[in-house]
Amino acid sequence: MNDAAAAHTGAWPLVPGLVIAGAGLGFLVVPLVNVVLSAVPGELAGGASGTFSTAQQFGRALGAAVVGTVFFDHVDEGMTEALGAAMPWVTGGFLVCAGLRAALPRRAVSGEGAEEEEGEEGAAGTEETAGA
Image (cartoon, rainbow, N blue to C red):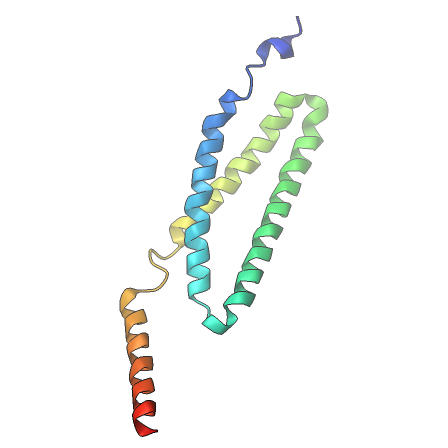
């Protein structure tokens, strides 16, 4: 029997890592979108959202290209070695994302600032209506 076939255990050993990665990305993407789009005026939100989406897609493509290049540079040494060469890049990418997530502000927009702005707009609108 082939050693590689005997060592194959199926896909289940990958599940815990994929669950952690998926949850981690969920905890990164939602606050990141919230922070980015809350800093943009409403009339520019569509363009900002498109730019943000383009940057995400570029980052995914670049990450896949780097990891794929490292993996396939080592695949002639064997799949285990190729995976071993690529995993530090994947792990490093996740650690960078975790560090950047920790650097994000805790709240996108403070509740007090938003209420003050709404109050000022409402007062200005009332004065304009009263003067008309």
